[in-house]
Image 1 (cartoon, rainbow, N blue to C red):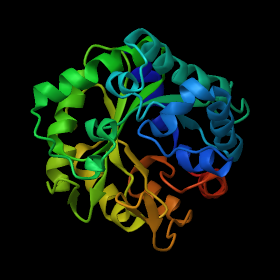
Image 2: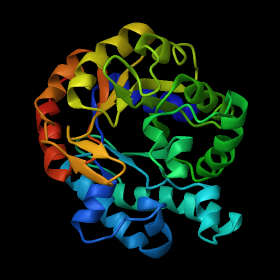
Image 3: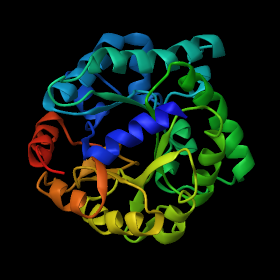
Image 4: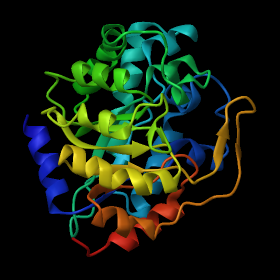
Length: 305
């Protein structure tokens, strides 16, 4: 697992800045994401738009660029008439686009890294169930869903998997089984509400499933409120002893029925230092956190251990 060692070494050297929300950056530049494939649709229709969105975050100071494969699945593409061969090409393309945008990084500071996103089963359903979990499937069924996509993404040689927005412990277990033997390290990131997963399991239980997983180089949370992230970071560090990943939303609330965001934005880049001090080594933003906020996170973390 040479990739694991390399990326883990980077985490050991200091906090890395993650990018922000890909979808909001694409929408900001005029792209309509109002279908079941969400940003993954542009892998087929407008790949240059994805590259431009990645580059906006790299230019803002992101050390890690997350691919547009969160909602890219064989099943989702199949519903749009895209066969498995073409779907596999688009999955690999997602890694190449991120790699092109990341470039060689800032040689005076550190390289940039590419994280291949694998969203939860509920993202493929596109019905809001990714925020609830509990799909009525067992661990083995979920592993069978995730493994083929992860195998294809691994072929494109990302630096790390982003197993992200995971709503419950069963799916986390399935994902950890699905990445075994692929030769790519992973971070595991839950979507949470209060002190538990979206499915209601305690965070201590959720984080513990990754504590002894060799492939997992960081554990934490994303797609949650900044306040919930504040409480989750020290728990993840204490339970697992691993570096923590944290990239919450802006603080606005997603209304899946109306497909709209509600409430005020609460993301404060100044929190980045507090998260770092509590054990976070991968720090950025998720939905509705744009390049401006990521530039502020990078400035907050610049020159810190």
